[in-house]
Length: 187
Ligand SMILES: [Zn+2]
Image (tube, rainbow, N blue to C red; front, side, top):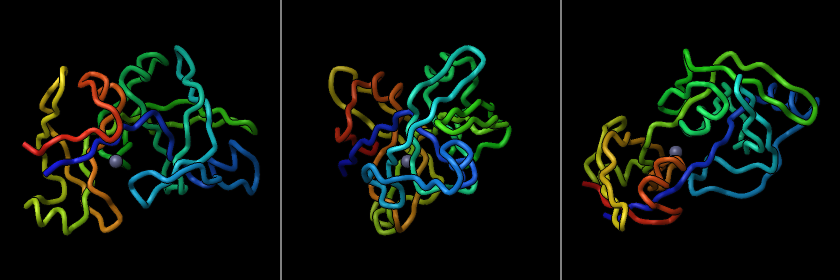
């Protein structure tokens, strides 16, 4: 089965309270565009993310607001601003690095929240049944082209709201010469 690649650029998930601290009291994220996963959207709002060695400019916020902040970046981004990005499954930010978030109306110190998302495969329960896969399983996918590789340790994520898609970050995609919408195969 062919699986489409979705490449994640650096982005932030924030709580409503944090959004208001950065953009002003009563502020709500505004819609920019959909992503393939229907439970999330790209907002118009961007913040700067500061670490001890530098600032990542224009980090896009994904909506809707979440229960807990999570700043997703590549290992290259993290090195550039002098923080560590632990490789984690989404929402597992315990013990991760903190950063300063800078918005047009204020800034906040985040105690933890910086992660590099573990490479993962979104799918519906139906697709999981068809492929014989279960939640949290690690699989491998093979890419093609001049920089063809096999990505191991791809975590299977299953939800009714998901759409079949491999999520890689820009470091991983560039290393394999992949662009959005390219297709890979399950090994
Ligand atoms: Zn994802």
